[in-house]
Length: 465
Image (cartoon, rainbow, N blue to C red; front, side):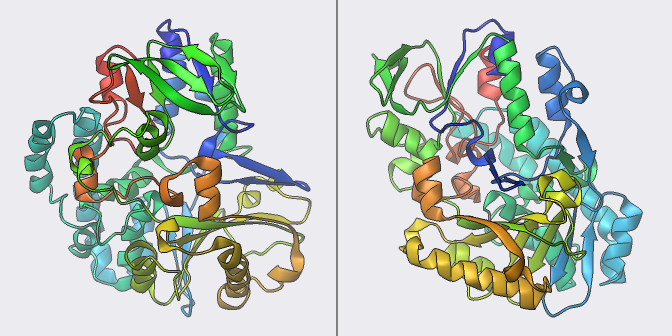
């Protein structure tokens, strides 16, 4: 919206919920503030680029703080931890505590990951994949970089110690990808953190949402919340506008959908088939979902960092359970976000605001979350107390909220209640994913979760961004 406004377009943003953000929503209760989805910022230069387009700077609009370490990784039953950070000497020292031989291969891993990031993401990733030939042109580069093999196999070429391998292949879980199934092009997810750092915005990630909303309004755009869209209207194969659930027709020459790409065509285009050739013959596989627990506590724990990963004893079985077997994991691995470690004002005095994320299967598992949710809540709290060492957590909880796969479906319109859109496997990436421009409806574009990885290339090439 900001980019379109800068080019002189008349822009209206429609949001189904009462506030902006979507997955990047925020919850406030009793003096505790929780980001409900994304909790870290990478590639801050993208924000610099966006604010410059709007005639301002990131520094004038936000306070970004670099995190050090980016996150701490703990393994249950092991007293050691791994601090994932930026400087090469410190990273090699962390690796060497587990395997000196692996530490010696770190530079080679980073060099190859850098090449994949620069050639597979920053260059090829800005090209549209509207035709199969576009994807075919990328394949030789990816083969040369060894970026098509599974991510876990790629990481295994450089690191052999199990803890070290897990520290470098889990990043695809941030986008819902099983490291054993996604291509190694996603090693760029770890590289970009090392290259550009991991950042925190004061007020949480939602402060970025609020800031961008301000730029839209200052640029002359309109934002309408609590305005769910019922249909994208078309005539003769071209969009003419949208119809809200209240029955209002809003004319438009261009419609850009940030809704779940899998459901935009099914629900908003009257059940049209997916706009990607493979999915006309089989349904796309959605990513796993998440069980989220938001805990406001009356005490603090020094063991918590801003970002903490707690890996269970059966890492591979855990991933298989939530991604392939589609069942509640028998073993737990958790991501914890405690922004009050960096910004104490995010919690009530003397307490913590803790966001707990547990990957779980999506709704295709058939689980009844009215039953599963309370069961998992108790398992997670017990695990954090007894396996991770947050003694007295249960008795210190003053504020508590949960978000389940059923909520992803009902509140965010996510297909199968997924948390990260379509699973990013090789045959569900690039050409095989929803491109930015709809192939059959002129004037319809897609952004956000579920569309192809090529950023906003097609909109840029047509002068729309």
